Image 1 (spheres, rainbow, N blue to C red):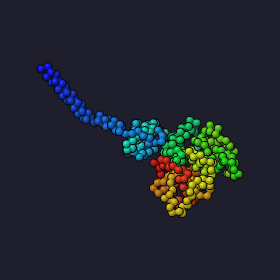
Image 2: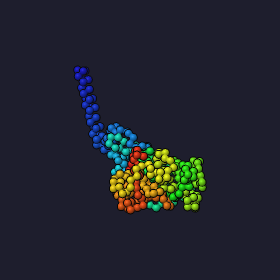
Image 3: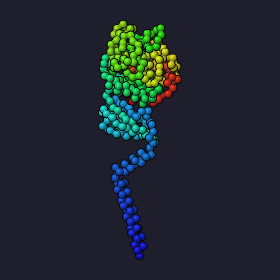
Length: 353
């Protein structure tokens, strides 16, 4: 009799446990928030955390946008960033982490929104003034420059393009064209000179703290934007870069330990293909050089049958925009195809947004 009672008690307990379990499940599945939370936890367990990006942070200009090749994006702070499909927009200065999910893997990226750079501005910008930035500002700008290059690929074609895009489009001011007073290579044609129309150093030339890196001088040292005597025009000009100085600066900052080359030297780095070659426009890629006798520029954008050419010439650094027909009718004559020089493309994009 006692054994029968104990068995009955166990059966009742099992039934009660089963009943309570069913009630809990019903409550859970009637609560959408809890169900969503469970699904999210299961999803996170199945996803693999892998390195999708080259960096763990990325700087964005205020009001700029960026599109990711992803299945899903999660934003930590929606006051800093907004989301439309796979495109995030920087709506307020500050920091926010994002989680980018692609297939069965994900990576996290800290987005730093700042107003010290602009959103790829190709319109007319104000000239850089002498002493426009202090040392703290320069340090932040140099961190952004280095981050952009690393994000797209250090020592890759995309890294060189990122450097050109940064200085010509994201940097808020336009550098003056300053015809070199000399180069850092010693030869019969050019005097030894550093930082006067050329700047073959990592980073920017925006504070007097950079003077310690200058080895040879004629009229300087003077940082970008400050007046200095230019030997060619025999007058004071605001210091900046000349055409090949801009290209070699971008290459050096992207990891190519290039010499202080002029335009004709740069033409020897790749295959020269004239516009008269009908197949040249099928071969050309972002990051290839564009040239005519004595002048070099870089193709840094292609979109909607338009070619975006970055150059320093005449009076300042600027962007030229051509259709194919306009480019054929322009003063430019050829491309220098740079595949054999760059070796790797990196995270190359035909356009910046």
